[in-house]
Amino acid sequence: MLNIKIEKTTAPKAKPDSSKLGFGKIFTDHMFIMQYSVENGWHDAKIVPYGGITLEPSAMVFHYAQELFEGMKAYRTADDTIQLFRPDKNIERMNNTCDRLCVPRIDPDDALQAIKALVDVERDWVPSAEGTSLYIRPFIIATDPFLGVHPSHTYMFIIILSPVGSYYAAGLDPVKIYVEREYVRCVKGGTGIAKAGGNYAASLIGQKRAEDLGYAQVLWLDGVHRKYIDEVGAMNVFFVIDGTVVTPDLTDGNILPGVTRRSCIEMLQSWGVPVEERKISIDEVVEAYKAGKLDEAFGTGTAAVISPIGELFDNGEKMIINNNQIGTISQKLYDAITGIQWGKTPDTMGWTVVVD
Ligand SMILES: *Cc1c(COP(=O)(O)O)cnc(C)c1O
Image 1 (cartoon, rainbow, N blue to C red):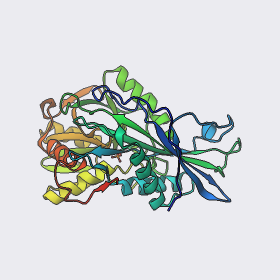
Image 2 (image 1 turned 45 degrees about the vertical axis):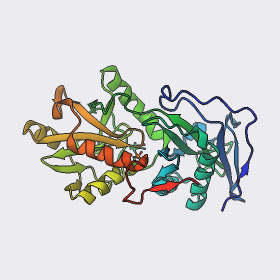
Image 3 (image 1 turned 90 degrees about the horizontal axis):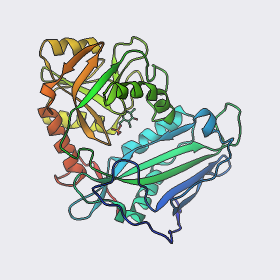
């Protein structure tokens, strides 16, 4: 159990208009901070007014990117219960990322206590309009003032919160995806499996090119054979080929193990829909498309839950999937998972955790 000191703000902000939230632009009144040192381990847990933090310019995070993060949400149900979706999975993944980046782990019970305590203090910030939620961003930074390349001896674990709007203001709109053949996001043995800021820095150039060409996101291919599909931008990716759902497997450690990905697989299995975790090449997808067997494609992630792919652009070739419409399986998964998250349907999977 953490002993969390709470210092409340004396100047609470006005709550924003829930129709103008967007994503990650507005932050709540408070944040959680905890320190790590070799002598004391993780200690000094506090909830304090949201605001700037002071670090030396030599702090290691600025130089060698020893940083990691998580992303999850708190949802308000119709009876004003505030609940989290599978927070244990995010915390487990955070600790796996810690291992990969030589950052000390945080006790999972302490991490959950910190998240719940902060969301509880900010419960009035969880918006209630359709599709809105409170985004939770835990992260860890290396703080030693030192320019040697070595794991830091001191760290800060911080949690900030941001009320976010409905991802789909006008229904589930399919997105256009650009298949990236030049740059790669990560390679086997690298940090693709870790939720690390550095991965995103490396991906910006591909993302920018896709945007310049009018595409919403990049589909990344594996860095070794340059043909197996890894994932889409900040989402995992699924294809429905001839009635079977296929998603890249995690065995090479170059794909981020998404909580939404796992939830889709488990949901599909509970429905008896055939689902395969295996390598899938871009050629297989193109062939399935040409044979008229590529029924659906979609990305999965906390922000959008399900993001239908309406168009794939590869090597000058444009593939329009399912007539640029959301597919049956995509829609069914979206309804089932968001139904549980917002408490509209009974949580038959035992995935929600109430913040009380
Ligand atoms: C966070 C993330 C995802 C999605 O994970 P969820 O747990 O489903 O939100 C997928 N790919 C990358 C690269 C990510 O950082």
